[in-house]
Image 1 (cartoon, rainbow, N blue to C red):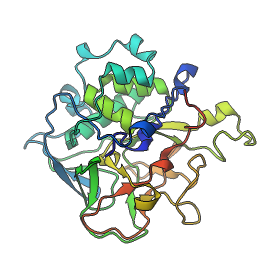
Image 2: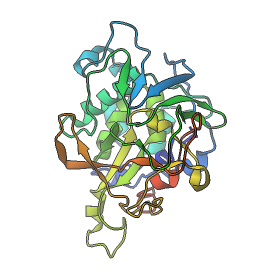
Image 3: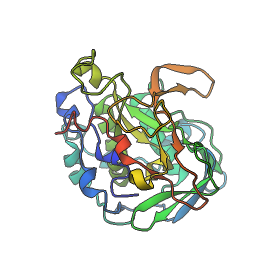
Length: 330
């Protein structure tokens, strides 16, 4: 996908308990959305395309090797950077997003790797290890050597998209109005310090990906930043979340309003246009045991806004992912 892997990434909002962090929201993507995303660190992900079926995704895991829980992969999480090589936590905690980008030597001009299921699961494990299983909005579930869960509701494949980088392609015809992506694998960070720690422990090339992919979602009421809103400024900040989609949904490229074919719809069934308003409404988070989370919500699903043909690339509308940009830019 484009250098910014969802202008989402371009509006990375460092939400934090410290002022230093929440003012460093990134408007980075507007200047780099035309650059193909890069990869300049050694990886074991040389595959050019990967196929997914419905909410599951094909795995390249060797036989007799599985990731059924965080414990099972603790000693071999392929997403983690060796502890002795990680940035100093004190130094890292005071870095801006730009500082991190330079420190990691992120290169956005070379074709980047298509991640294997092992990597996605490893990133989910890393996220849960930082925020704790009770606060995490992603659950680790038993996974076989063949499949793992994604937030997609259709058959899809991931491959390099000419001129754009990694992209997602439909494998079957999809009718208008079909739910395509339900955000069930999206990690939420309420504290910028936790988001920073997540970046710190990941392999550098993955941390660079996350810096591109991450975006800010507003889960409050009314208009974000409106002085007429009964909620004050600080209260509104508490309703912002840094989001990272920990599955191939992060590969969705921008089609804009002319070419985009998957989007949020508002309560009237129209393409949601105001990114600083919680419309469409948020969706409840249902645990795997069937219970509903009372302490957190997630984004409403993305739907097909027109008929999509088999083989066609799924294209997002990036400006739907821009909460907070006008409110907290450095």
